[in-house]
Image (cartoon, rainbow, N blue to C red; front, side, top):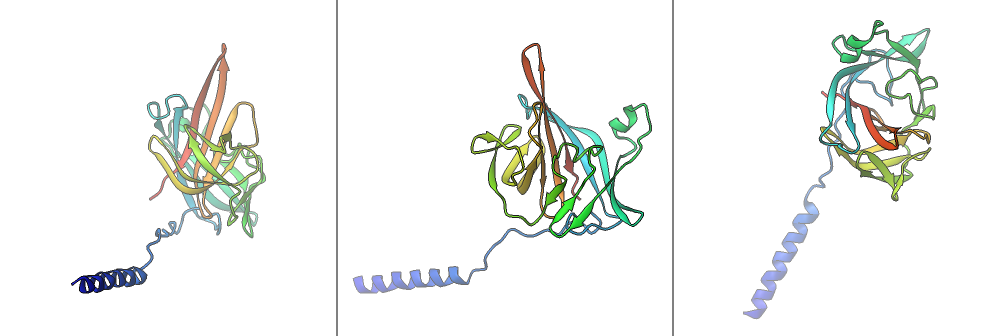
Length: 230
């Protein structure tokens, strides 16, 4: 009986091993972006993406999180044979309605060159104004792994700043959630921390933390733009 039991156990182990070897490998599905969305890897006239504004504070990240109801539209347009990004707010966005001047669109050139996107003039952009480098790198290996610490991203317990390219597995707060994305930061500044969070095709988050000191008290205010996905 002992021999029969041993043979039976061996058969079960062999069967389970074969089943595992033949099981298909389950991978995260690659979801193609919408055909008409702004595609950083394949810029074309007529592409359009929309972003929703959000605010919060670092000391009450969850409690004070809210969407502002401002909607930023970003379009790829052509002028004089050159591609530009056109930014403007939708008609009923609070920013658009509260300003004393009309919501004039902002235009700035954008160039796709090999595995890079060049944005040489971005100071008027609501998305890219803080980015010190004129190049957004695509299809590049990451330099550092990032970990969320409240409203910010850290590398080895230090603030993520400078020209390194990072990857974050999860960055979540309020109703914002991004997973497994590339991150670049602003140039080091005294009063601001900021990140562009994207993949090789789309920008998902433009996240800014502004540091304000008043009467010895320091407050950190969050503002940003999240891609509105269909």
